[in-house]
Length: 326
Image (cartoon, rainbow, N blue to C red; front, side):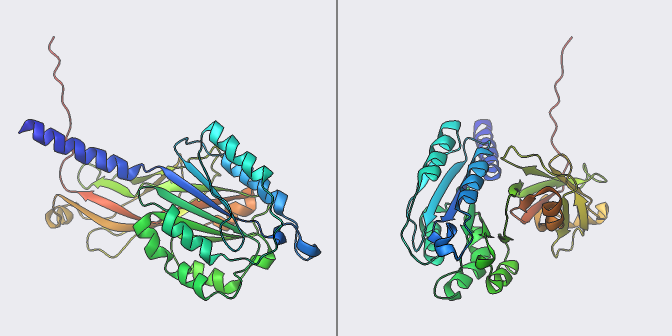
């Protein structure tokens, strides 16, 4: 019986560890239509700038288990380059980016490549980050693109997928698309990034708090950043509880030492009598001063996922006591 219980405990521990430490897949959907090269002098020539950006972005990755996928596209995905973020892998994919050339004149189809990515490349056993880099608008109108954006939140929750829509020039800006993104979780829009780097922070999805042992202490959300870029100071995050009868909090705090700390307000005696041994409630984290950080440091901070779980534990934490015989 003891062996069975030990096996179950180890199985649970491994599952929980896996759920908190998925490997990352970063997908760069790279617009290579000729407008990126200043086609007929009617559009800005930003092609080399975006190549340089991709080089910096890929070289900044520090976790060798991260998968890097680069997808040049016009009206469809033209190439699919996938490597691990090892030194060899990063060098290989950057060389492909530098050497790539395409002089075919086409429109810009954003919808079809995203659909293909959803069907074939985003996997729910990984933490997926999709970066769309485009200097144009969807050819033929926004109907299907808006549908993808509005359904992204539901898709993202199932597939652990976060998207960043980067509008590289004024010509790519579309208020209808921007408004749809601003009303949808797990997708963000960046306009004209210029010489800016972004830092994506991953909070732990499960936050544990023992209502007795931790009473009076702050709850903590650890943040993971898998890039060798220093975090700017004074990043402000709002942490709030969703509707529940147990604990209430709504606080804006500053990230310190890659950690979000916040206070829980509750009556211990009442909460102890109301809760079972363990219960999870939804909480939300939201960046509050992204534009300020961008202006002051030329760094864009991304925080995902935004919806987390706070696990309230209603029993003393087990401690291991070791008696040493003298």
